[in-house]
Amino acid sequence: MKKNILFASALLTSSMLFADSLKLEGTIAQIYDNNKTLLIDSIYGGQMAIKVLPNTEIEMDDCGIFGTDKDGTFKDLQVGNFLESKISYGAPATPNTQAIPIARKIEIQCYKKAY
Image (cartoon, rainbow, N blue to C red; front, side, top):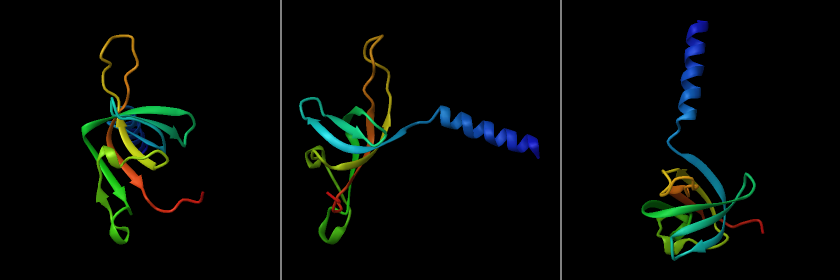
């Protein structure tokens, strides 16, 4: 029994270390249309830039008629929108530089905010 628990915890830990993507939540602080990059004020503290690619899936929760969900584009993103994004890190273009995380999926929340 102890071996099974040890194996399960080792498997869980290794899957977390080699995760395919990370979750980022926060508010859009700035939008850079020229290079399709967003600056996010993260709920975890600090700011982070993420790159939006043409194949990034953008979902707009409660943004359609009668609060339905709809698909969005980069033009639908606005400063102040709260978002959840799945990001992944690619290899940097040049050595010894930091790679900008790539947004694989972005979900915007359109419900009314407290302030």
